[in-house]
Image (cartoon, rainbow, N blue to C red; front, side, top):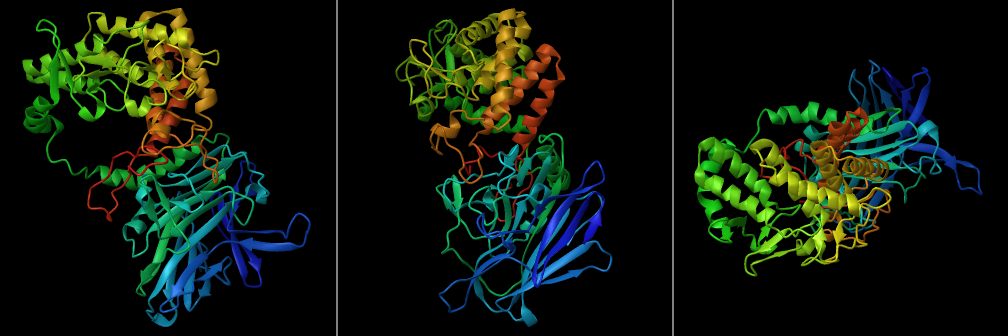
Amino acid sequence: MIERGNVRVVDSGEAGQHYLRFESRGHDGTWHVVCATGLVDTVSIWDERPVAKSEDPLCEWKEAGDPAPRAVTGFFDKVSPSAGGSSLALSRDVGGRVVEETVSLKDDAPIHVRVRCTDIGGRRRPFELGRLMTNLYFLPEGKAARSTEPLDFAWLPLLHKEKDHVCGDHFFRSPAAMVASGGFFAALVPDLDALAARGPVRHALDLRVTDTLVEAPRLSYGLCPWEPHGHVHAIHTADMFSPVSGEELAYEFDLFVGTTADYRQVPRLVGSWLWERYGRRFLEDARPQVLPFEEYGRTYVYAEELPRSVKWTGDEKAPRAGIDNRDRRGANFHAWENDLNVAYGIRHYGMKWGDASLARIADGILRMYLDSPRRDGAFPCVFNFRANAYEGTLYWTGRAVDPREGFDAAAMGVATWWALLMADDFGDDGTLRNAAAGYARFLRDMQLPSGAVPTYFTRNLQPARQLLQSATTCISGAVLARVARLTGDARIRDAALRAGRWAADNAVPGLVFDDFEAYYSCSPKPLHAVDYWTGIRPHCNLSIQWGCDQMLSLYELTGDPAWLDTGEYLLGILSLYQQVWSPPFYTEYLFGGFGVMNTDGE
């Protein structure tokens, strides 16, 4: 056994079947099992004879010239504690090679685990590796039998759509597998410095609640060849092997275990650890930008690209402008591409540089937005230059309803949000705020009894059943809260609070951030989709961002710190999509960028 602070690791098992228990000291000073690499269970519910079960280590390989794969699953046969009592090493012979798992404890740090595989006697025999992985079970108080379900919190950067899917290292932005239930939590975080020295075999992370040897959530990490499945999933199949020339194979990870009264502290803890250990270092070397944004815009984008992209329409006295995106049918005021976002930057630099031509483009874009024909406050969000007409929304994202003549609350909400930001920062004669107030009244009138706001409306302003109650409510709720604060309208304020309560009760607890992109983009899935192996819902970081905006706006409206606390939790979830490092196995410098969804590799 090794112990440090409130964590201890206990060697369990006997007769050559060793596994580890990871325990945490509670507030009352007693020790509690949180997770383990094995468990003494019964043969079955009908046969109560005790039997030890473990899947650590998991090793699959093929010897050179031997087409038949070999496998070893579970238990180490040797244990050797360090002299100082700060580490524990377990090992076993696997086909003439030694797999060694070393667990170390340090002050103010998580449990650190290093696994390596070396040839016995220094030989360097080539072979092919299928998998070498560590499997840990989440076993609060040593209980299995699915006693932790439903989990209070579960996180994996990439979900499963098929049984063979894993989370490959391409998806390691801020990588972690996390679970929490009943006041206990565990989080497995790959060591990114060790991963940077990755050898010939790719790495993968996994979490499964079902389809495991022990009926308990299983967190896994290690060496695992995988391939992209489309560009939205990663797959490892039984016939995938990577050639190894005989060099030492190794991987490392950090393990957090403990108790908490609030599961929302778990992603905060892990996110802070990732940024303290890796993000700060990379932030000091923010490449590849070589010019300030201002000079990049002045020299290249505004000088070359903007004149080619802007298209004008309307009469000479009140010309309208937009970015003519032919792949999106023209100028877009959509949740993906929104010309008001462009106009904001153009207005800022136009004012700073005293550039009247930029100011004219920003004015033209605002006019394009304001001239969109309103129906009870709702408005179409695409201007088709070829048809010289406004259209409802982007076809891809609204095709299940009425994309040409219907209305899209995600698009209208984002456009209104940017209009309010422009009014705040660049002034407004009341036109932008009046348009926002008209749209807020539309949202108020269309709000469902539950507090949710539908995503899509037909040409007759009837709510569509697709995404009827979804996380699109967050951007609608953000607009309602902002307008309520600006106008003092009591009915809009009430609608904003109802939308906030809906989001807090329905979207936040299970991270059900199911906006249009999670279903209608390049990662299609049913509207009722769930990861069968983890229970995690697919979601998109777009609506998580809207949730942050909504909670901040509600805090500003009410002064209630509970909204701010929820918003900070969602900001922590959003941060788990951010690239906290730059993997050296890619030529691009990727630090700082964001992924899109938990079912997408972009």
